[in-house]
Image 1 (spheres, rainbow, N blue to C red):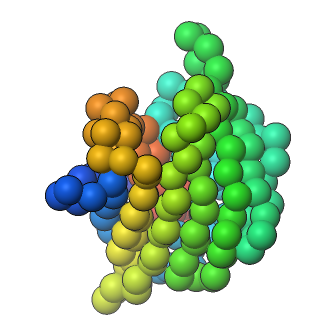
Image 2 (cartoon, rainbow, N blue to C red):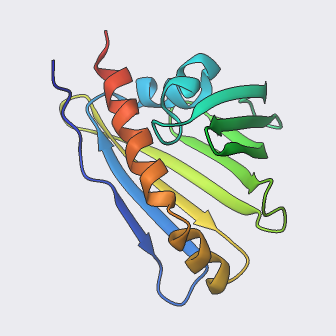
Image 3 (spheres, rainbow, N blue to C red):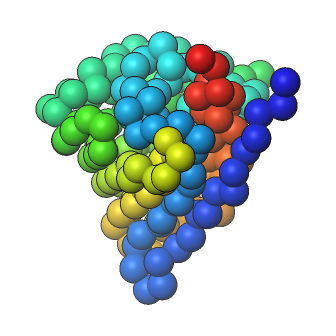
Length: 160
């Protein structure tokens, strides 16, 4: 079976320290939202395919937090943050930090909008502390993780 994937748009907002990600999914908002908050589902899709995810903490609720590690043959990559707002099935606001760059905290807002035909549009906005930090994030190869992660999310959502 071939799972269709959709195009992901990753863009810098001109003259602002903001990255916008736009992606559509062939599933209703409730299922896309659940795949972002259910830790067993998150482990199946978040990040590049070559990485294995281990979760140390995952409290996907307003006021909760998370910490996880991605591992490959080259090492470990640790991430952590706080869930500021978790509002099913439409919005998650969280902080995001890569432990290798602890001064680079971003504030991320994800909104899910229902589309015709049981589909969903996801819009993610990441705000960092400078345009330079934004450009470094874009240059880091983040698009590989975003694109491969969303392809894996497509596969997960294609299951019953």
